Amino acid sequence: MKDHYTEEEVNAILRRAVERQPLPGDTSREQLLALANELKIPIDAIERAEREVVGQLDTVQLRTEFDIERRREFFSHLASYIGVCGFLILLNAFVTRGIWWSVFPVLGWGLGIYFDAVKTYCRAGKDYENEFRNWLANREAQRKLPPMT
Image (cartoon, rainbow, N blue to C red):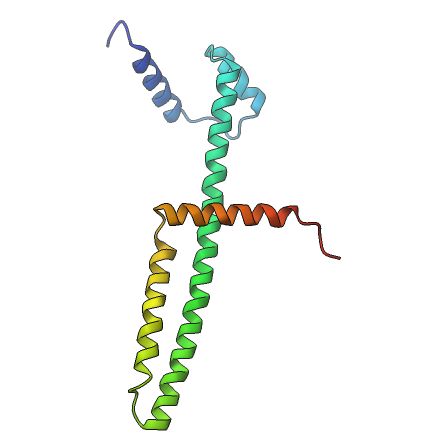
């Protein structure tokens, strides 16, 4: 073992030790501040870290809700696609004894469903971020509306 460590090494060692140390259940904020005080960590540094961690967890939860809503909308579109395509194929089969003309709308709309699926399950890029921000803005706007009586 070394006798002297750089600031980066100290931070890395302490971070790793804290991550590996099992803590007994939930910890109150007062206990967290007392622990930080023992380690000579300034309270403002703890508060900054606390805001960052809580903010990241909130963002992860919001993104999960957004993704669930996107998938729900996709499956609604998929169900409509299957229903309409089934109707068109049956109609075509009864009218012309074949499925010739129903292939075109089925394929055309199928491409739309394919691109919708790609958009739904792709979580990267500017479009995803813009949709997420719009979803957040709409969600906040709905929360601010007074209840309807």
